[in-house]
Length: 84
Image (tube, rainbow, N blue to C red):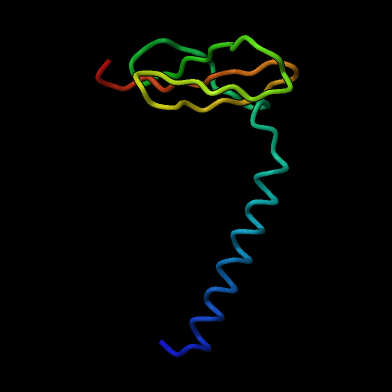
């Protein structure tokens, strides 16, 4: 590939990433959470203690899990494997 073409592809990729970041950043992750179901293939949502101003770190089975803020509360989102 020529340097000019590589530069253009890189610029388009960076622009795409920036645009998607703006779109995803505008969505509140606490708006559309799945229903908490403790079944194989389900999702468990757990309220985390602590101040709302500091994002906690949550782990399950020694792996970090997703943490989202909903209003003034932090929630851990834990996926349950199909083989559970």
